[in-house]
Image 1 (cartoon, rainbow, N blue to C red):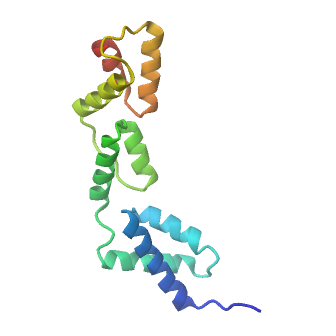
Image 2: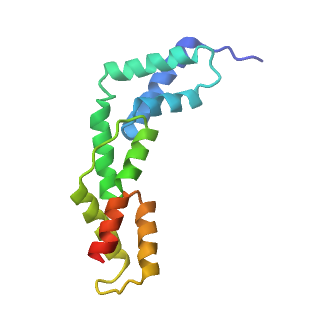
Image 3: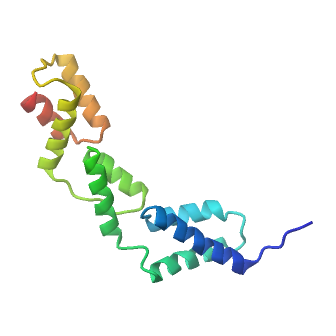
Length: 154
């Protein structure tokens, strides 16, 4: 009992999948292509089906400007106290352009993380300062911000 593939149904399914993905959250074009490729990997004219579904989403204005999407995602990650290296790496993985950094905001985020983790009047030893530096670096903060927090603020 073989099931014949209907190309028209596959095209409609791809468009529906794009609608479902975008309804949940904003996706970059690269993300949509990856997810559609996973979902419809057994189809013959995969590239054509994906292109048609992406073009459909663009015609409906569901896929916006990549710079706007990058800025919205960066704002969300700033609220989570992620560093600029983490943010730009995340955007690169999603196929979006990098965003510029605001040094004051980065310093403020790093300080709030350290203040949350340690008491206000905590005395940092050399080893603990190194630990704080590694922790901030793992959160994606640049070396200049980490250095300012450790040597000027602690």
